[in-house]
Image 1 (cartoon, rainbow, N blue to C red):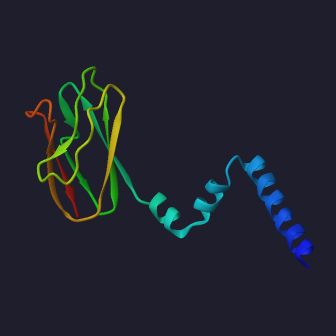
Image 2: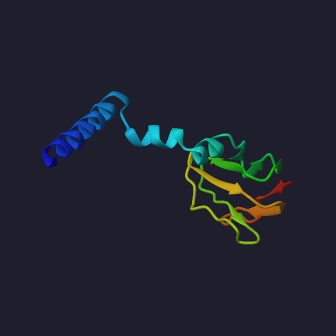
Image 3: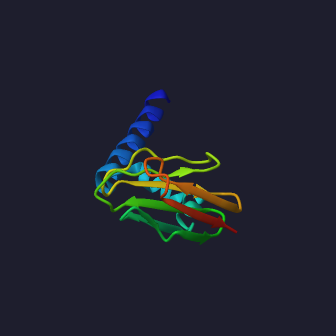
Length: 125
């Protein structure tokens, strides 16, 4: 009986390795089948470009659950800091990005910690 169970377990492992070889990742398939992963993937996304010492758009209107991506398109470093300290990025070099998901409605003012005159606002409904 133990040998039969061992054979079944080995066969299952081999099938898993074959699946991994064919798909490149078993983890990717498991995540794709997860209801939580699919709901997260369906969340809308919004973008803010950092360029010429400005955040564009300067005000972004989104719904709760939206992920915002700030991308530094400037040729000098910048970062993104919320006035209420709810989020803060590392220093972003050219083409680096920072993302944050807004889960609660409200008005979120932010600025560049390196250049405080650079400001922006995210309004979450």
